[in-house]
Image (cartoon, rainbow, N blue to C red; front, side):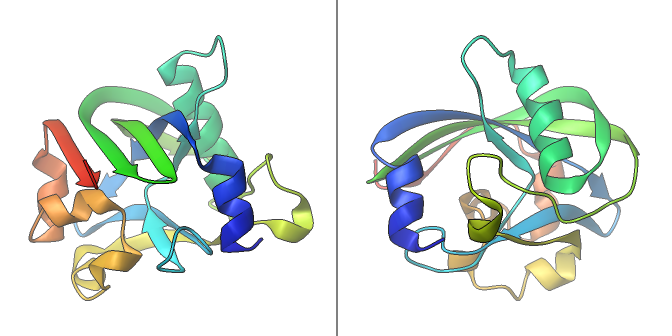
Length: 163
């Protein structure tokens, strides 16, 4: 899928997303997407857009499974991140997730055909690895936590992009 196709699919509307933080002492589970915005590849925690009539928790569990193959339990809400950089506008709710079950695998995005999937990789990324990835290739929340391990303690509302 090209960047223009991603912009057409997700741009020019407000998206409400639920995202999961599956953390270990030395890192966090991240998904690498291609063709997101102008920077190319982007590493971000598993998650995605809510469907009409779906709760945040149900969205979180569905999206986490779709992207990683893991079934998890929703933990507490940790923080909210709002991203506004036209044509993208998202409000993302980040939850701690626990008790992963299943086999970790590269998942899929059901809104895209199998030939145009943008998920490239799913894996545990150590905080030392995250610290050397350029910020334009990381979810914007990482601009608010230096070193990256501080993501474990974030609470409140954070903003990225153009406000």
